[in-house]
Length: 386
Image 1 (cartoon, rainbow, N blue to C red):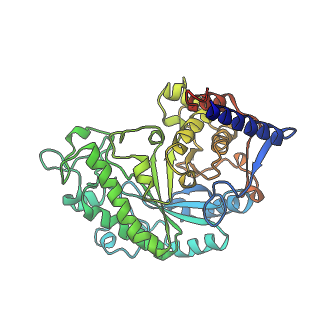
Image 2: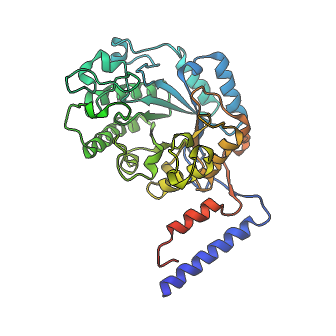
Image 3: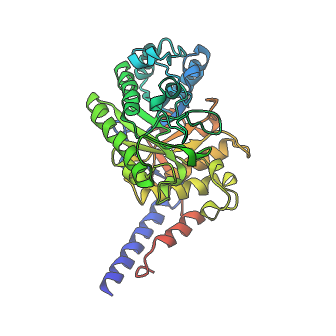
């Protein structure tokens, strides 16, 4: 009974403080004493393809956003899912003609971004690689008859169990750090999911347990090679990994993987969730609820300082504009997460959804608990708290 009274009184006091601090204001401002990264600032970035990064016209548009808004990070593609590599100086890349000169002056561009205080992240697509898998078949996922397995789009994949595929990708990562990138972000760090995956044959017996171990093993190797060079490591994972307890059939277990990296970016795009996920009739039309539930699930399982979600700034089946982007960002803030990244495959971003540059080191939570917050808060209470 004493334990119950203490918990009840503590909750009441905290709730009173919350409402008193919010009274008369439209929001509560959170400063740098909450979750942050990169030398005490929140990271708020955008995805930039290699071709956009190599274009003077598009560089100017990106730089204008960096100069005038809260955006302060650039996620630049240096290896794509077809296997193209956009940096020079990696022997295996050059020998197999995987290099594409989309950003011929990459080092100069990185220097310019860093002069402006922009945090630079090199995105590397790891195991979906339609170039090296075909150039060196011994590294690819196979069919039962020994031919190269391909997904629904006809792309071949590297075998995640094969440590030669680890080394290939890590050499590219190391070269990116030498060029000046602050962080390496691994995408497609998973097993194939689209196509007849029952036909996939790997270099060792495959199971959910072994698949998860392989991905964690790759990240351990990455940590050993990358962190000593002064760079951070992040990973992109499926949005549902924040609440799923299995590997989702692709080897991704967010808790085990996050232990090996500095940041994790679940792709919580509302358009990618099936109807009735989290009890939401049409997730694509409820961006706040989808992101709120996803982030809430994540912070129950991993350290909030490592969480930096990808948010949706594109339309897929439902029109997304400033309000839909803002709602996703607000869902992060209402979970006390100040870091986020925006994805648009065309690299066109909604300026109206962004705040001014002087607000990049603060964020605002909702004035009072939203219906969604109250609903999920009730779920968290244990029987003795109720």
